[in-house]
Image 1 (cartoon, rainbow, N blue to C red):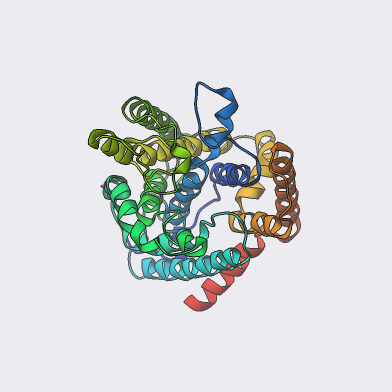
Image 2: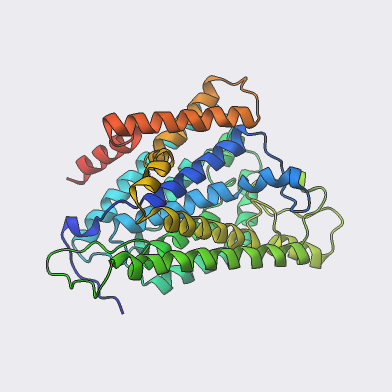
Length: 385
């Protein structure tokens, strides 16, 4: 059993994990593809022309899971601190959450024809604060409960948005809070599992032998990759067999379960709880997308963390993008709003991807922390003090 003990500020910080940054880059590039890449609407594994749709739903869920990972990393990794430090951590995260909501609303006001995830993202930071000192099993249990309640909650809030426009619908309907809270809790549990080496401080017991990241991090990375693949595969196979996506699913609204007209009660229940459709908020959707996110994080960490200089150099463009996710996300939406006539397609996505990499590498090389990350951190630190 892990002992939770008070800690100074430095104890909750550790070496940056490049694998997590690469995972963030994958999520960001996936969302760019969903926004400007001209990807297919629905994924059908029997039709290779639809495989580009793999980014739909999975990119935003990976982004949310990584939000939970970030919260876990800044709040002690495997060992969250006790009072009074945990209070300072919560205060800083709360300020960051409010600022992220403000940035998200600002991006929505630009009129970008994209559903902006940041307001929900910021609200989730606030909702997860009570869970910072929970045991890992409690965190994953809460995530499972959210997955079970996801579809009923999404259906329950639909009437609240009956007479609202796109702006209001983005504030909770497109990215249902319960659904995405499940992702953030999964990410927090992943961080508590020990993605990388535990940061050691004076007075800590030394590692038994060998590199500490093998026993404390590498095994976890393999377990995450394997468990994520198993969870996603099982979910999508079960969903496809028991609740195949209906032909008229194109009428579905993102984040809300969809039932075709003329469906029987059994078919309706299957579509609500077991649909493999992206953004359906079903148990299968949440479990499948969370499984994909866990597998991506495990794979990226396994490939990048603890590797030699050559791997680090190859991964640097992705690491740079992932080190400033808020800035890159906001910047790509600003570009979309500024150039509304941008054609959707693979070529456009490549321009966005290369542009993001060049911007992130140059900024990190000469200025360090991303612009919005630096601004948010400065305000959060000022308010906390």
